[in-house]
Amino acid sequence: MGTIDVIKKFIESTSVIEMAVREVLERLPLRFRYGISYGPTFRYWLGFLKESEKWDRERLEAYQVEQMRNLLIHAGRNVPYYRKVFNEYGFRPEGVQCLDDISVLPYIDRATVKENYNEFMAENIPRTGLIPTATSGTTGIPLAIYGTKETEEKHWATIIDLWSRIGYHPASRAIFFEANIREGKKVGLPYKKYGNKMILSSNYFIDEWIDRFAEMMNKFRPEYLIGFPHTLATFSSYMKNKRKSLGFGLKGAIVYAENVYDWQREMIRDVFGVGVFGDYGMVEKVIHGGGCEHSAVSHLYPQYGITERAHLHDSKHELVGTGFVNYAMPLVRYRTGDVCEDMKKACPKCGRNFDIAYNLTGRMGDFLIDAEGRIISIYLNLDFKIFEGIRKFQLFQEIPGEVEMRIWPDVLFKNEDADRLINEIRKCTDPLGRGVRFRTEAIEDRDLRSSAKYRMIDQRLDIRIFLA
Image 1: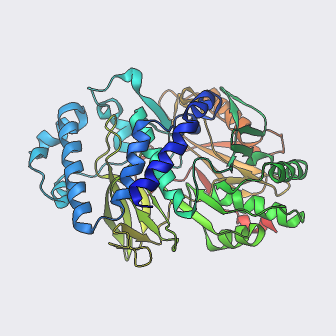
Image 2 (image 1 turned 180 degrees about the vertical axis):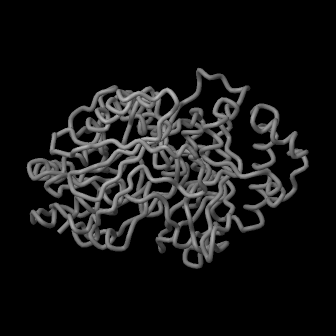
Image 3 (image 1 turned 90 degrees about the horizontal axis):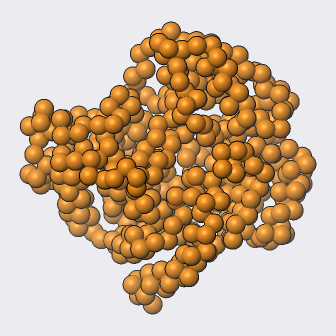
């Protein structure tokens, strides 16, 4: 069966369940609601990715030049920020002929976007059709990035294509671990099932719920476990310590959004008997990548965008991305804050002519430790109104059960702003009331710009101590 036949078969199988998927979208958490969609853009983009992964380097770069030129022409005509920058630099996007032509433009970062927020929105795309997705807040206050349905379908197709390297399919039975499972704006039950997917709350990793989760999993019989690396490692540790096992075989574990360390891979593999597959991406949608069938090294999709490297020191380079999939809020030469040591132009094991990033490090695992040494996963899904009077915040911990919330106040800051934020964080981090004591410290330094990524969680405790 040829490549096109395989794609057609895959598309047919997804179209059968498309209507069922759409019926449950409104009941899913936000990050699934807009992500899981098997519409025509999804099917086209998935087919394109399957076909173009066999292209040679010259053809891939020619495609990138064409896409970069189109994106820059659009940005110069429709995005106020780039219209201004292009005029200042005398830059003519119509004249772009090679990838290096973009190097005359300045880098941007999250601070640039926040300071010029409305100017990054494309004027030719109706606001009514925009979909907001919030960043996790690892650099301070979360930032909403707006895209369209087409953006989200291309992004989700990229994820499905990546995960398919280890056999994942939209029809695969999978368990997703989430810190909070929401019903509308409220935190709901610690589990939810829809079709062939189940969500389990990592904030309920205590004896009673671990037993129930293990029982649910044995009835559900998932093929894949999906979540943050530290979440899957924590769950693996609980299962091992309680001598729990699954009465069936998994096909794989998929981790995303943060660094995955060797000890985490070993723990998950030891308990569940499967390899750990890494997915590297970001809400800003400028770079996406992950491992391949034979290697854990990150393969960066050339179809998704352009990846540059900004030298930091020694052999360290910061990844800089220009994404092709989001015309609603395009980001050109965006400094991600993620670092790699080396990059090659092809994978010697799978043969794909993608940029291969070695020793790629993103944000650290987000977790807190309560007074009894139990691990609390953190994924804050907060209303932006909570941040009135607050420019940025950080949770600092070096003692179990004790958390210092550092606040960078705005000129209109009031003490009740801090109290309101702490209350919301408590709801997200400690729904069982396991006892984490917060105290507040206001930081007077108002210079928030930095080339390094600022961590929402400054965790000084070693999670391995609490997994024993």
